[in-house]
Length: 173
Image (cartoon, rainbow, N blue to C red; front, side, top):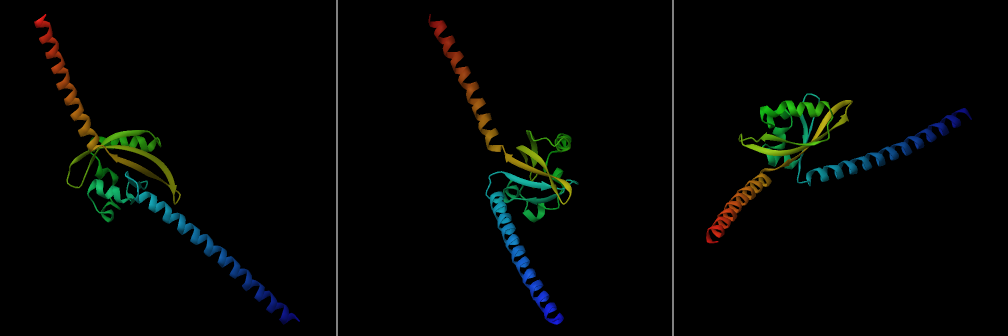
């Protein structure tokens, strides 16, 4: 009877372990699916996204970040994020991180070729492995700035032509 009882307990234990393993596998599959969804979202944005650790080392980034800065993703991971900005911007960026500022601000970034890029940045702190990491969303403003400059030039030219026409009309009168 005692041996039968032990066998029943062992079978029951095996059954419970099997059920727990199924639950764990299901949870693992769901977590993996969520992770894949998040990765797909990160890779489909038009913004560059990078995550830095407390030492300002890039630990994750998306493809747009690679395209913006001209580095392969593998090159970016392990770089200091301040290698991607003009040296005059470092103090501003550090202050934003310390304050956990969620405000959007402009900085001058530097790509692999050394070309200066106007960018718009918004960051926020997250906890990862019990450490504060920074997620930065970066939008390239190069084309917008070119368009803005062209519009300013056109406005100046238009203003000059308007003044010239007004002067012409005054002389006629």
